Image (cartoon, rainbow, N blue to C red; front, side):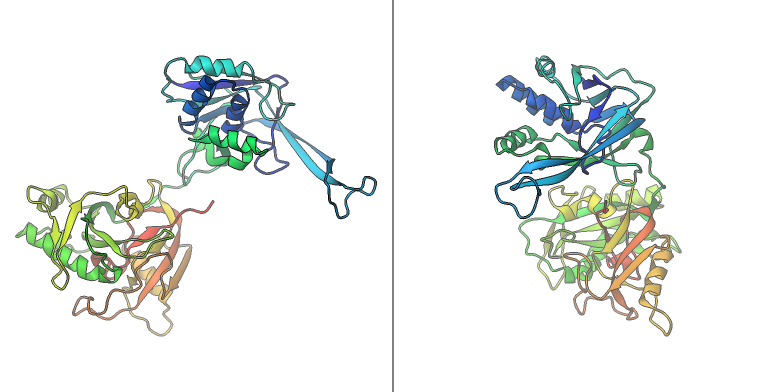
Length: 462
Protein backbone atom coordinates (compact mmCIF):
# COMPACT_ATOMS: atom_id res chain seq x y z
CA UNK A 1 0.00 0.00 0.00
CA UNK A 2 1.50 3.36 -0.95
CA UNK A 3 2.05 6.11 1.59
CA UNK A 4 1.78 9.76 0.58
CA UNK A 5 2.58 12.81 2.68
CA UNK A 6 0.81 15.66 0.89
CA UNK A 7 1.76 19.24 1.74
CA UNK A 8 -0.17 22.43 0.98
CA UNK A 9 1.76 25.66 1.31
CA UNK A 10 -0.62 28.00 3.12
CA UNK A 11 0.79 31.15 1.55
CA UNK A 12 1.98 29.48 -1.65
CA UNK A 13 5.65 30.07 -0.76
CA UNK A 14 8.27 27.50 0.21
CA UNK A 15 11.06 28.92 2.39
CA UNK A 16 14.01 26.57 2.85
CA UNK A 17 17.74 26.84 2.38
CA UNK A 18 19.07 24.50 -0.27
CA UNK A 19 22.30 22.54 -0.12
CA UNK A 20 24.04 25.66 -1.44
CA UNK A 21 23.38 28.78 0.69
CA UNK A 22 21.33 31.44 -1.04
CA UNK A 23 19.83 28.99 -3.57
CA UNK A 24 16.14 28.13 -3.24
CA UNK A 25 15.41 24.50 -2.43
CA UNK A 26 13.15 22.96 -5.06
CA UNK A 27 11.87 20.34 -5.44
CA UNK A 28 11.42 19.98 -1.68
CA UNK A 29 13.75 17.50 -0.05
CA UNK A 30 11.98 14.42 1.34
CA UNK A 31 14.09 14.78 4.49
CA UNK A 32 12.62 18.25 5.02
CA UNK A 33 9.09 16.83 5.34
CA UNK A 34 10.38 13.94 7.43
CA UNK A 35 12.09 16.36 9.85
CA UNK A 36 8.84 18.30 10.23
CA UNK A 37 7.18 15.06 11.40
CA UNK A 38 10.12 14.33 13.72
CA UNK A 39 9.69 17.75 15.33
CA UNK A 40 6.06 16.90 16.15
CA UNK A 41 6.68 13.40 17.56
CA UNK A 42 5.74 13.02 21.23
CA UNK A 43 5.35 9.35 22.12
CA UNK A 44 7.13 6.03 21.68
CA UNK A 45 4.45 5.07 19.13
CA UNK A 46 5.32 8.17 17.10
CA UNK A 47 9.02 7.28 17.08
CA UNK A 48 8.21 3.71 16.01
CA UNK A 49 6.13 5.01 13.09
CA UNK A 50 8.97 7.30 11.97
CA UNK A 51 11.51 4.49 12.22
CA UNK A 52 9.26 2.39 10.00
CA UNK A 53 9.02 5.24 7.49
CA UNK A 54 12.80 5.77 7.37
CA UNK A 55 13.22 2.10 6.37
CA UNK A 56 10.81 2.40 3.43
CA UNK A 57 13.45 3.60 0.96
CA UNK A 58 14.00 6.89 -0.86
CA UNK A 59 10.56 8.30 -1.78
CA UNK A 60 9.40 10.10 -4.90
CA UNK A 61 8.60 13.82 -4.93
CA UNK A 62 5.58 14.95 -6.95
CA UNK A 63 5.81 18.69 -7.42
CA UNK A 64 5.43 21.58 -9.84
CA UNK A 65 8.51 22.34 -11.92
CA UNK A 66 7.43 25.92 -12.68
CA UNK A 67 8.55 28.20 -9.85
CA UNK A 68 9.52 31.80 -9.24
CA UNK A 69 12.43 32.48 -6.90
CA UNK A 70 12.90 35.44 -4.57
CA UNK A 71 16.04 36.22 -2.60
CA UNK A 72 16.79 38.62 0.25
CA UNK A 73 20.28 39.64 1.37
CA UNK A 74 20.90 41.08 4.81
CA UNK A 75 23.50 41.48 7.53
CA UNK A 76 22.78 39.66 10.77
CA UNK A 77 24.43 40.66 14.03
CA UNK A 78 25.93 37.68 15.89
CA UNK A 79 27.28 37.74 19.44
CA UNK A 80 30.65 36.26 20.29
CA UNK A 81 32.78 36.47 23.39
CA UNK A 82 36.15 37.05 21.72
CA UNK A 83 36.49 39.06 18.58
CA UNK A 84 39.14 40.51 16.35
CA UNK A 85 37.65 43.34 14.38
CA UNK A 86 33.92 42.97 13.70
CA UNK A 87 31.31 45.63 14.25
CA UNK A 88 32.61 49.19 14.64
CA UNK A 89 29.65 50.16 16.83
CA UNK A 90 29.10 47.07 19.02
CA UNK A 91 32.42 45.58 20.27
CA UNK A 92 32.29 41.81 20.69
CA UNK A 93 29.86 41.40 17.79
CA UNK A 94 30.34 40.66 14.12
CA UNK A 95 28.14 41.48 11.17
CA UNK A 96 27.56 38.43 8.93
CA UNK A 97 26.07 38.60 5.47
CA UNK A 98 23.19 36.17 5.01
CA UNK A 99 21.10 35.30 1.98
CA UNK A 100 17.68 33.69 2.07
CA UNK A 101 15.93 32.33 -0.97
CA UNK A 102 12.40 31.03 -1.33
CA UNK A 103 10.49 29.30 -4.11
CA UNK A 104 6.91 30.02 -5.11
CA UNK A 105 5.55 27.18 -7.26
CA UNK A 106 2.63 27.62 -9.63
CA UNK A 107 0.86 24.86 -7.66
CA UNK A 108 0.86 25.30 -3.88
CA UNK A 109 0.56 21.54 -3.26
CA UNK A 110 3.34 18.93 -3.46
CA UNK A 111 3.63 15.34 -2.25
CA UNK A 112 6.31 12.98 -0.95
CA UNK A 113 5.35 9.47 -2.07
CA UNK A 114 6.48 5.98 -1.08
CA UNK A 115 4.73 4.03 -3.88
CA UNK A 116 5.50 0.55 -2.53
CA UNK A 117 5.53 1.08 1.24
CA UNK A 118 4.37 -1.93 3.21
CA UNK A 119 2.09 -0.38 5.84
CA UNK A 120 0.70 -2.29 8.77
CA UNK A 121 -1.43 -1.65 11.85
CA UNK A 122 -2.15 1.91 12.89
CA UNK A 123 0.96 3.45 11.30
CA UNK A 124 -1.09 5.79 9.12
CA UNK A 125 -3.09 6.96 12.13
CA UNK A 126 0.13 7.79 13.98
CA UNK A 127 1.46 9.75 10.99
CA UNK A 128 -1.83 11.65 10.76
CA UNK A 129 -1.61 12.53 14.46
CA UNK A 130 1.91 13.94 14.01
CA UNK A 131 0.98 15.73 10.79
CA UNK A 132 -1.80 17.67 12.53
CA UNK A 133 0.83 19.18 14.84
CA UNK A 134 3.14 20.35 12.01
CA UNK A 135 2.90 24.17 11.62
CA UNK A 136 5.42 24.62 8.80
CA UNK A 137 7.83 22.80 6.48
CA UNK A 138 11.25 24.39 6.06
CA UNK A 139 11.53 27.76 7.79
CA UNK A 140 8.86 29.02 10.17
CA UNK A 141 7.75 31.48 7.44
CA UNK A 142 6.79 28.51 5.24
CA UNK A 143 3.50 27.59 6.91
CA UNK A 144 1.95 24.39 5.66
CA UNK A 145 -0.80 21.82 6.05
CA UNK A 146 0.49 18.25 6.09
CA UNK A 147 -1.81 15.34 5.29
CA UNK A 148 -0.70 11.66 5.15
CA UNK A 149 -2.65 9.37 2.80
CA UNK A 150 -2.67 5.62 2.23
CA UNK A 151 -2.93 6.08 -1.54
CA UNK A 152 -1.16 7.76 -4.43
CA UNK A 153 -2.06 11.44 -4.78
CA UNK A 154 -4.28 12.58 -7.61
CA UNK A 155 -1.87 13.68 -10.32
CA UNK A 156 -1.96 17.32 -11.35
CA UNK A 157 -1.17 18.49 -14.89
CA UNK A 158 1.67 20.77 -13.71
CA UNK A 159 3.38 18.15 -11.53
CA UNK A 160 6.54 16.21 -12.35
CA UNK A 161 7.50 13.00 -10.59
CA UNK A 162 11.04 13.30 -9.22
CA UNK A 163 12.49 9.86 -8.52
CA UNK A 164 15.91 8.53 -7.46
CA UNK A 165 18.09 8.61 -10.53
CA UNK A 166 20.88 6.55 -12.08
CA UNK A 167 24.07 6.98 -14.06
CA UNK A 168 23.48 8.38 -17.54
CA UNK A 169 20.42 10.46 -16.63
CA UNK A 170 20.28 14.19 -17.32
CA UNK A 171 18.81 17.00 -15.17
CA UNK A 172 19.67 15.47 -11.80
CA UNK A 173 19.50 17.33 -8.49
CA UNK A 174 20.66 16.12 -5.09
CA UNK A 175 17.86 15.76 -2.52
CA UNK A 176 18.30 14.83 1.13
CA UNK A 177 16.35 11.71 2.06
CA UNK A 178 15.51 9.73 5.22
CA UNK A 179 17.49 6.54 5.71
CA UNK A 180 17.61 3.68 8.26
CA UNK A 181 18.87 5.17 11.51
CA UNK A 182 17.92 8.75 10.56
CA UNK A 183 15.55 9.25 13.51
CA UNK A 184 18.19 8.32 16.08
CA UNK A 185 20.82 10.41 14.27
CA UNK A 186 18.50 13.44 14.33
CA UNK A 187 17.68 13.04 18.02
CA UNK A 188 21.36 12.76 18.88
CA UNK A 189 22.43 15.81 16.87
CA UNK A 190 19.53 17.86 18.27
CA UNK A 191 20.55 16.94 21.84
CA UNK A 192 24.04 18.28 21.05
CA UNK A 193 22.62 21.52 19.68
CA UNK A 194 23.38 20.66 16.06
CA UNK A 195 21.37 20.89 12.85
CA UNK A 196 19.64 18.29 10.73
CA UNK A 197 21.91 18.90 7.72
CA UNK A 198 24.87 17.61 9.76
CA UNK A 199 23.46 14.05 9.54
CA UNK A 200 21.81 14.45 6.13
CA UNK A 201 22.33 12.12 3.18
CA UNK A 202 21.58 13.13 -0.39
CA UNK A 203 20.86 11.05 -3.48
CA UNK A 204 20.45 12.23 -7.09
CA UNK A 205 16.88 12.73 -8.34
CA UNK A 206 15.51 13.65 -11.72
CA UNK A 207 12.07 13.95 -13.36
CA UNK A 208 10.78 10.53 -14.36
CA UNK A 209 10.29 11.72 -17.96
CA UNK A 210 14.05 12.40 -18.22
CA UNK A 211 15.13 9.01 -16.94
CA UNK A 212 16.21 7.49 -20.21
CA UNK A 213 19.86 7.17 -21.16
CA UNK A 214 21.21 10.29 -22.83
CA UNK A 215 22.73 7.92 -25.39
CA UNK A 216 22.38 4.20 -25.91
CA UNK A 217 25.29 2.37 -24.28
CA UNK A 218 27.89 0.56 -26.36
CA UNK A 219 27.81 -3.20 -25.90
CA UNK A 220 31.04 -5.09 -26.41
CA UNK A 221 31.63 -8.56 -27.83
CA UNK A 222 30.89 -10.32 -24.50
CA UNK A 223 27.61 -10.11 -22.62
CA UNK A 224 27.81 -12.62 -19.77
CA UNK A 225 30.21 -14.14 -17.25
CA UNK A 226 30.37 -17.61 -15.75
CA UNK A 227 32.23 -17.23 -12.46
CA UNK A 228 33.99 -19.71 -10.14
CA UNK A 229 35.36 -18.58 -6.81
CA UNK A 230 38.25 -20.34 -5.11
CA UNK A 231 36.72 -22.48 -2.37
CA UNK A 232 38.04 -21.73 1.09
CA UNK A 233 40.46 -22.44 2.59
CA UNK A 234 42.82 -21.69 -0.29
CA UNK A 235 46.19 -20.01 0.02
CA UNK A 236 46.22 -16.61 -1.64
CA UNK A 237 47.26 -16.80 -5.27
CA UNK A 238 49.21 -13.85 -6.60
CA UNK A 239 47.78 -11.90 -9.53
CA UNK A 240 51.06 -12.58 -11.29
CA UNK A 241 49.85 -16.16 -11.78
CA UNK A 242 46.90 -15.06 -13.91
CA UNK A 243 48.19 -16.56 -17.18
CA UNK A 244 49.09 -19.85 -15.51
CA UNK A 245 45.56 -20.15 -14.10
CA UNK A 246 43.71 -19.11 -17.28
CA UNK A 247 45.80 -21.49 -19.42
CA UNK A 248 44.93 -24.36 -17.08
CA UNK A 249 41.27 -23.28 -17.09
CA UNK A 250 41.20 -23.29 -20.89
CA UNK A 251 42.72 -26.78 -21.09
CA UNK A 252 40.25 -28.10 -18.51
CA UNK A 253 37.25 -26.70 -20.40
CA UNK A 254 38.43 -28.05 -23.78
CA UNK A 255 39.10 -31.48 -22.25
CA UNK A 256 35.60 -31.61 -20.78
CA UNK A 257 33.97 -30.81 -24.11
CA UNK A 258 36.05 -33.47 -25.81
CA UNK A 259 35.47 -33.75 -29.55
CA UNK A 260 33.61 -31.30 -31.76
CA UNK A 261 34.68 -28.27 -29.72
CA UNK A 262 32.82 -25.10 -30.77
CA UNK A 263 35.05 -22.71 -32.69
CA UNK A 264 34.26 -19.83 -30.34
CA UNK A 265 35.47 -21.88 -27.39
CA UNK A 266 38.71 -23.17 -28.88
CA UNK A 267 39.40 -20.11 -31.03
CA UNK A 268 40.22 -22.30 -34.03
CA UNK A 269 38.10 -21.59 -37.09
CA UNK A 270 36.11 -18.79 -35.50
CA UNK A 271 37.27 -16.37 -38.22
CA UNK A 272 36.52 -12.85 -36.99
CA UNK A 273 34.01 -13.88 -34.36
CA UNK A 274 35.00 -13.22 -30.71
CA UNK A 275 36.03 -16.24 -28.65
CA UNK A 276 35.22 -17.28 -25.11
CA UNK A 277 37.68 -15.38 -22.89
CA UNK A 278 39.27 -17.27 -19.97
CA UNK A 279 39.74 -14.83 -17.11
CA UNK A 280 41.39 -14.58 -13.73
CA UNK A 281 39.53 -12.22 -11.40
CA UNK A 282 41.86 -10.14 -9.21
CA UNK A 283 40.96 -8.20 -6.07
CA UNK A 284 41.00 -4.61 -7.37
CA UNK A 285 39.36 -1.22 -7.16
CA UNK A 286 38.98 -0.61 -3.43
CA UNK A 287 41.20 0.86 -0.71
CA UNK A 288 42.47 -2.48 0.61
CA UNK A 289 42.77 -4.33 -2.72
CA UNK A 290 46.01 -6.27 -3.12
CA UNK A 291 45.50 -7.92 -6.52
CA UNK A 292 45.42 -11.56 -5.39
CA UNK A 293 43.16 -13.79 -7.50
CA UNK A 294 39.70 -14.47 -6.12
CA UNK A 295 38.52 -16.83 -8.84
CA UNK A 296 38.26 -17.50 -12.57
CA UNK A 297 35.57 -16.84 -15.16
CA UNK A 298 34.46 -17.43 -18.73
CA UNK A 299 33.33 -14.40 -20.72
CA UNK A 300 30.66 -15.56 -23.17
CA UNK A 301 30.50 -13.95 -26.64
CA UNK A 302 27.30 -12.08 -27.41
CA UNK A 303 26.86 -13.76 -30.80
CA UNK A 304 27.61 -17.32 -29.67
CA UNK A 305 25.00 -19.72 -31.14
CA UNK A 306 22.59 -21.12 -28.57
CA UNK A 307 23.51 -24.77 -29.24
CA UNK A 308 27.23 -24.08 -28.81
CA UNK A 309 26.53 -22.18 -25.60
CA UNK A 310 24.48 -25.11 -24.27
CA UNK A 311 27.31 -27.49 -25.16
CA UNK A 312 29.73 -25.35 -23.16
CA UNK A 313 27.36 -25.11 -20.18
CA UNK A 314 26.77 -28.86 -20.09
CA UNK A 315 30.53 -29.45 -20.06
CA UNK A 316 31.34 -27.15 -17.12
CA UNK A 317 28.27 -27.04 -14.86
CA UNK A 318 26.29 -30.11 -15.98
CA UNK A 319 26.08 -33.49 -14.31
CA UNK A 320 29.84 -33.53 -13.70
CA UNK A 321 30.64 -29.87 -12.96
CA UNK A 322 34.07 -28.29 -13.11
CA UNK A 323 35.11 -28.08 -9.45
CA UNK A 324 38.91 -28.07 -9.42
CA UNK A 325 41.97 -26.92 -11.32
CA UNK A 326 45.38 -28.59 -11.25
CA UNK A 327 47.99 -26.01 -12.25
CA UNK A 328 50.90 -28.50 -12.05
CA UNK A 329 53.53 -26.42 -10.27
CA UNK A 330 50.87 -25.28 -7.79
CA UNK A 331 48.60 -27.19 -5.38
CA UNK A 332 45.21 -28.28 -6.66
CA UNK A 333 42.58 -25.51 -6.41
CA UNK A 334 38.96 -26.28 -5.46
CA UNK A 335 36.35 -24.21 -7.29
CA UNK A 336 32.86 -23.14 -6.32
CA UNK A 337 30.57 -22.11 -9.19
CA UNK A 338 28.43 -19.00 -8.97
CA UNK A 339 28.89 -15.27 -8.36
CA UNK A 340 29.43 -14.42 -4.69
CA UNK A 341 27.74 -11.13 -3.66
CA UNK A 342 29.85 -11.03 -0.48
CA UNK A 343 33.09 -10.67 -2.46
CA UNK A 344 33.34 -7.70 -4.77
CA UNK A 345 35.61 -9.34 -7.34
CA UNK A 346 33.23 -12.30 -7.72
CA UNK A 347 30.18 -10.23 -8.63
CA UNK A 348 29.15 -10.06 -12.28
CA UNK A 349 28.32 -6.33 -11.99
CA UNK A 350 31.88 -5.58 -10.83
CA UNK A 351 33.12 -6.43 -14.33
CA UNK A 352 30.05 -5.56 -16.39
CA UNK A 353 29.23 -2.25 -14.73
CA UNK A 354 25.63 -0.95 -14.45
CA UNK A 355 22.99 -1.74 -17.06
CA UNK A 356 23.28 1.76 -18.54
CA UNK A 357 27.06 1.41 -18.90
CA UNK A 358 30.07 3.40 -17.69
CA UNK A 359 32.27 5.78 -19.65
CA UNK A 360 35.53 5.33 -17.74
CA UNK A 361 37.37 2.00 -17.52
CA UNK A 362 40.81 1.04 -16.18
CA UNK A 363 42.88 -2.14 -16.57
CA UNK A 364 42.84 -4.69 -13.77
CA UNK A 365 45.39 -6.79 -15.70
CA UNK A 366 47.92 -5.25 -18.12
CA UNK A 367 47.04 -5.00 -21.80
CA UNK A 368 49.32 -6.60 -24.39
CA UNK A 369 49.07 -4.57 -27.58
CA UNK A 370 48.14 -5.95 -30.99
CA UNK A 371 51.18 -4.43 -32.63
CA UNK A 372 54.81 -3.44 -32.07
CA UNK A 373 56.30 -0.05 -31.29
CA UNK A 374 57.97 1.50 -34.33
CA UNK A 375 59.21 4.94 -35.26
CA UNK A 376 56.36 7.49 -35.16
CA UNK A 377 54.05 4.97 -33.47
CA UNK A 378 53.18 5.72 -29.86
CA UNK A 379 51.91 3.37 -27.20
CA UNK A 380 48.60 5.25 -27.31
CA UNK A 381 48.29 4.37 -31.01
CA UNK A 382 48.74 0.69 -30.24
CA UNK A 383 46.09 0.80 -27.50
CA UNK A 384 43.65 2.53 -29.86
CA UNK A 385 44.28 -0.23 -32.38
CA UNK A 386 43.58 -2.92 -29.77
CA UNK A 387 40.31 -1.26 -28.69
CA UNK A 388 39.13 -0.68 -32.25
CA UNK A 389 39.99 -4.21 -33.33
CA UNK A 390 37.23 -5.65 -31.14
CA UNK A 391 34.67 -2.97 -31.85
CA UNK A 392 34.99 -0.33 -29.13
CA UNK A 393 34.64 3.31 -30.24
CA UNK A 394 37.54 5.76 -30.19
CA UNK A 395 37.87 7.13 -26.65
CA UNK A 396 37.75 10.81 -25.79
CA UNK A 397 40.53 10.40 -23.22
CA UNK A 398 43.30 7.84 -22.94
CA UNK A 399 46.07 7.33 -20.39
CA UNK A 400 48.80 4.70 -20.56
CA UNK A 401 51.20 3.76 -17.79
CA UNK A 402 53.84 1.15 -17.03
CA UNK A 403 52.45 1.00 -13.49
CA UNK A 404 48.89 0.07 -12.43
CA UNK A 405 46.32 2.86 -12.49
CA UNK A 406 43.93 1.41 -9.90
CA UNK A 407 44.47 -0.17 -6.50
CA UNK A 408 45.28 -3.87 -6.67
CA UNK A 409 45.73 -4.13 -10.44
CA UNK A 410 48.13 -6.88 -11.52
CA UNK A 411 51.48 -5.26 -12.30
CA UNK A 412 52.80 -7.91 -14.72
CA UNK A 413 52.25 -11.66 -15.23
CA UNK A 414 54.97 -13.73 -13.60
CA UNK A 415 58.03 -14.40 -15.71
CA UNK A 416 57.78 -17.69 -17.58
CA UNK A 417 53.97 -17.75 -17.70
CA UNK A 418 53.54 -16.07 -21.10
CA UNK A 419 52.42 -18.55 -23.80
CA UNK A 420 55.29 -19.98 -25.78
CA UNK A 421 55.76 -18.99 -29.42
CA UNK A 422 53.98 -15.64 -29.14
CA UNK A 423 55.80 -12.51 -30.30
CA UNK A 424 57.01 -10.30 -27.45
CA UNK A 425 54.76 -7.24 -27.61
CA UNK A 426 54.50 -4.13 -25.44
CA UNK A 427 52.51 -4.39 -22.23
CA UNK A 428 50.84 -1.43 -20.53
CA UNK A 429 48.15 -0.34 -18.12
CA UNK A 430 45.36 1.83 -19.51
CA UNK A 431 42.66 4.23 -18.36
CA UNK A 432 40.14 5.02 -21.05
CA UNK A 433 37.10 7.28 -21.20
CA UNK A 434 34.55 6.82 -23.98
CA UNK A 435 32.12 9.43 -25.27
CA UNK A 436 29.25 7.00 -24.69
CA UNK A 437 28.78 4.62 -21.75
CA UNK A 438 30.04 1.08 -22.34
CA UNK A 439 28.63 -2.13 -20.87
CA UNK A 440 31.25 -4.71 -19.93
CA UNK A 441 33.02 -6.92 -19.59
CA UNK A 442 35.70 -4.93 -21.42
CA UNK A 443 38.72 -6.96 -22.55
CA UNK A 444 41.28 -5.88 -25.14
CA UNK A 445 44.72 -6.71 -26.52
CA UNK A 446 46.41 -9.70 -28.07
CA UNK A 447 46.12 -11.86 -24.93
CA UNK A 448 42.52 -10.91 -24.15
CA UNK A 449 41.36 -14.53 -24.45
CA UNK A 450 43.68 -15.53 -21.61
CA UNK A 451 42.70 -12.71 -19.28
CA UNK A 452 45.20 -9.93 -19.96
CA UNK A 453 43.72 -6.54 -20.85
CA UNK A 454 40.75 -7.04 -18.48
CA UNK A 455 39.22 -3.69 -17.51
CA UNK A 456 37.16 -2.75 -14.49
CA UNK A 457 34.67 0.16 -14.53
CA UNK A 458 35.57 3.25 -12.59
CA UNK A 459 33.03 5.04 -10.43
CA UNK A 460 31.41 7.93 -12.27
CA UNK A 461 32.35 11.35 -10.95
CA UNK A 462 29.43 13.70 -10.16
